[in-house]
Length: 173
Length: 161
Image (cartoon, rainbow over the protein chains, first blue to last red):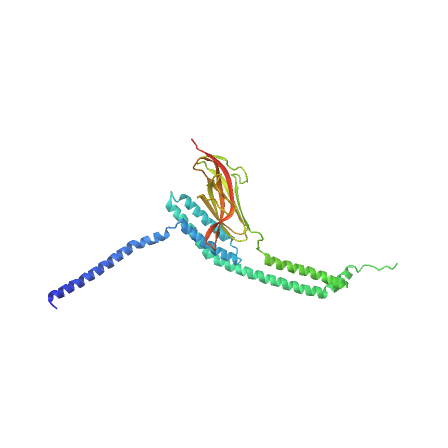
């Protein structure tokens, strides 16, 4: 290889390294610029996002209700969230940042409901199981009571009747 | 003979108690005729005293009343729309007009919702029909659908000048 060709090859390698480093620097700079913006983009809650979250929470609430859970307090929370969305909608054109805050609060409430719904569902399943056990116990008690009445009822009745009328006297006319 | 009669009566009573318990357990929470209520109340929260004549942009207050007797939780939306004498609306067809406002609530079984709303009219006109439609969220379809319940009040709106 001639010295000129070697020099060209070396300078070409150097250029490649420089370009690579420059590319890395640009990528790093872009990442640093974009990174702080990303959470802001995610935090920008909208009315439709909040609604979607409420629909998701409503579905969780329905599941809990179908399992027999008491979901009235979940419904109240979702109504709070709906009120916040409504307030946000009413000020969205005049004060968009406050509106976004309200939408975010609504989403937070919906998220809490989504987290709480499975617990209510479990409580419902447990309550239903207890209710079934109680019904079986009640029926068993009634069956035993029925047998006792059938077996000993008449004897007991007449014994009690005799005791209640022990002072009666038989008069023959 | 009398012993058998006493036993039969006692057993009948016990059988009735058992049948009642079982039926209560199976019928609990079942709604024979599910329905939802929609009503518009006047400013005094009564059926009456509705506004009839208004000025343009004059605020007026009404109360929305929604009742859930569907036997399950419901996600309701009430649309407020503006129509006129020729507008068509019935139990199966909602008014073909854009909503002026919408209100939403989620009600659990047998819960009711009373909400104060303040509205105003932007354009003068006579025989306006302020229509309130009840829509419900259908989880299976993932959309709100018209529930066939609607109310209206008639309004005449005059310009303020």
